[in-house]
Image (cartoon, rainbow, N blue to C red; front, top):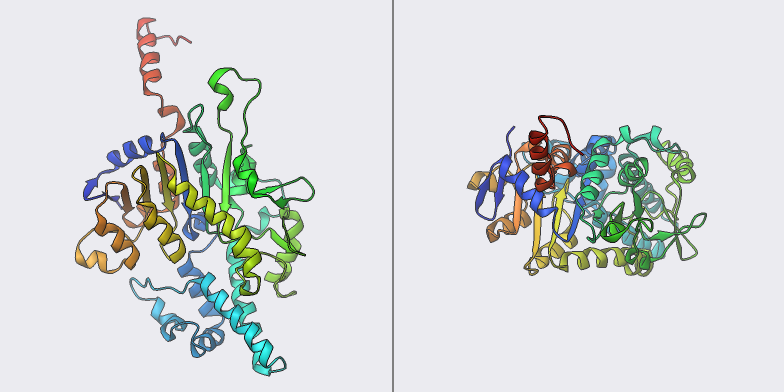
Length: 414
């Protein structure tokens, strides 16, 4: 399937898009925002797939959520998601937050209620489905990271880092995913990842670490500021985060895997200390501190001059992120490139299947907004392949080498 690309109100072909990406990754500040779709090639699920799986495996639970007013009645019926273009999916984080608040209120009023016990088990069922989707590859846990398990994440990081020029800031990776695909990919190829946590044996959250960077002390001149690191902000949490006694720690995958495996296998309930999900009971600690700090970093990036952010696997289902992206358009030097498979064009019938937020952004016809669609052509793996390889950046040097080669009779001259 061919690419459908629109920058403002101008259509771009694949060659134009590649040229645009080359220019954008040369800006002073670059970032990607990865949604659930970015983890699908690595074994994850889209929100659509996750919700369908939940309804299929826990039909009674979904019906009780609908009867309780937590989701719409049609969201509890599998058949409604077999339609050609269903886009109004429940927001999983918002739903979990509402369920948590209801559980707290119910516990306060009717702690011994039998229905409360059923309700808690229903929440457990949804949490376990999310954990299963975020595990990705069970064989990757507790073992040295292998680059061939996450090839597209590896290629993404290599091309983001390779695009940085001496003196430019390291790229940011923002993600709504709980999985470890980015961390494992970076570690497998020796790219350092700043996650906000510092320490060796006791990694605690220290947001000031986002203001630090790496440099080669043996290099001379501008080369000292070459890039070999990324900044990673996991906006919705991570499978390896833990909160105990008000302290936030990042655990090693080998340490957390036994707990996650017990949850998936149904041996244990979801560990309440794991910071996998938003919890209304811990609002001040989680949203007010850790998540709040990460979203502040996201907002700060969008306000930086000469910046570009590429959206991949993100379906515009998070109202908080949507508001930040929309308000960021007030930054006159920000460029947003959104890879959205369901975007097929601007005809009324094609727009009807898109979310209201996407239609609103398309209506702006801003040259700083580029939408790339066309079904599979806009999937995460195809997006990564469209990014320019680092060796293609310095065209002047390439031309210079070709001239030297011609002058020397065809032999390479170094």
